[in-house]
Structures are given as structure tokens and as C-alpha cells.
Length: 132
Image (cartoon, rainbow, N blue to C red; front, side):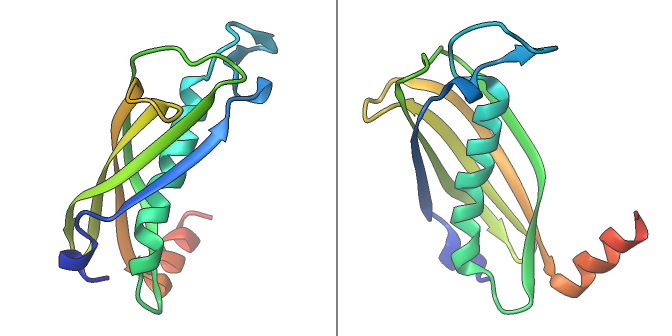
């Protein structure tokens, strides 16, 4: 991965908020809105899409940090748009800002920061194997 070239790369994930994305605890749905954990998933997906095109052969990324401020509700049936932008990079780390919007509007429903580490695939496989 070339850290200078990935800077500024942006990726977007768009989708309709579904019933499966609502917050539910012990099987009880709390609100008919986009849950924070669903937002976390979509932020991870968007940040991964930033990284993948820049990985060299034999490299792989692994998430190491995600922070989210869920600032506004987004009801089921609405469209969400999650945008990740690479704002920092070095040979082993990619940092993205991640923002969730109400569809095509500029109304922010969530914002955060996601960090991925970049390793040779063989090294990552060794790390995972040590913990099995």
C-alpha cells in the first residue's frame, strides 16, 4: 500500500434502513430507527472499501479501532449514506473519518473514526493462528 496515494480516497455505501437494522435487546425492538451497531457495520464496510483498492499483493487489512457518535435518528424506510475518507496513512496504518447521512442530504446522523492496520497476509495468518 502506498500511503501517499491513498490519502483523500473516499468510498460510499448507500442503502435503505430495514427492520433488521433496528436496535433490539433480548429480542425486544426498542425503536424503529437505524441502530448504532448497524451504523458501526456500515462504517466498517465503507472504510474497508477505501483500503482494498490500494492493497498490494500479499497484503491484508484488519480493523483496529472504531469510534462513533450517533447524533440523530434515521427511521426505518429512509435511505442512509455512509462516507469514509482516508485522512491519515503510513505504511502500516490507514485512518478514515466516517460519516453517516440522511440519504442525499447533508444531515449528519453519525460520525466517527476508523483505523485499519495493514500487514503481510502471512503475518496476519500467524497472528490469528496464535489465538486459536
